[in-house]
Image (cartoon, rainbow, N blue to C red; front, side, top):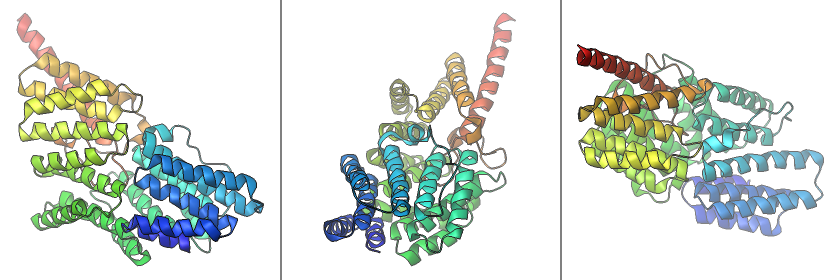
Length: 408
């Protein structure tokens, strides 16, 4: 109960009170409660990007698991929770692509809260990579285990509902916005997780704006985003995703200068280098839409030069498409063709299991290289691939036509 209360406080912005409460638990509680409290400390610290403190808490929990005399059932449940927290820490530290490589559903999982926690954490990582088809079995298994349990932690219920909304959207080609978020918002508010409730409301309003174009919904969305930006009590990772969503939506449907401002704020809040490069690529796209072509080109080149790692494909793809767009404006068809061909090659190398069918739901325009729908955990890749391949075919046709004209 104390751990649940601490998680509520942290999600609502009172991080220090949450850590103080958990510290009191670690001083005089039973070994089981101490380990559970240390795992909660790790998750709270990770959400604020305090990676070293988060790792230290996990190491302390692992030491207690090795030395304390716990029953096999309790120890197994706590190990699963520890593994889930470790996975989230790796995601914050190195990015979801690095954490997603070895993920597999275990052959046997006991009907325990720790099993649900591990499956939810694994599903979040796969969703953050845009791998909806790979994520779906994890969500289904977690839902089945949660149904069999007599009691599930409120935070697990809420995160599982969010993941289910994600899967229903990404795996349904005809969906134009997420459904089920009203239930998620109500569950989060009823359980006292106001941070999750606020972000889910932002996601719902963003989806309504994209689907309807209603100016009243747009104003409500921007007002809520301003409220999140002003509230430093909201966890950093929640503000990061809020600004990322706003940058993506504004760049596709709204004001490019609002998009640039949101991308800059998201860049400041980025948890790791992979996310920072992706935010810089989004910033370059926003400047290109706003007409600041020189700044856009400089930032895009910085992204290309800094995207040498194995998990920076989406940032590199976005930067390449921005450079192609700028070359098109400057009437440099050979450079445009080269950049679009590189982008198409990158798109072809992305895992096919990650893509949501997008032919009926996304605009095939420069601005929509990433799906312009808000996401609680991530951005996904399907529109990036489809648009990049379409642009490569178009550019190839233009180059063949120019060669014929030149020969003629």
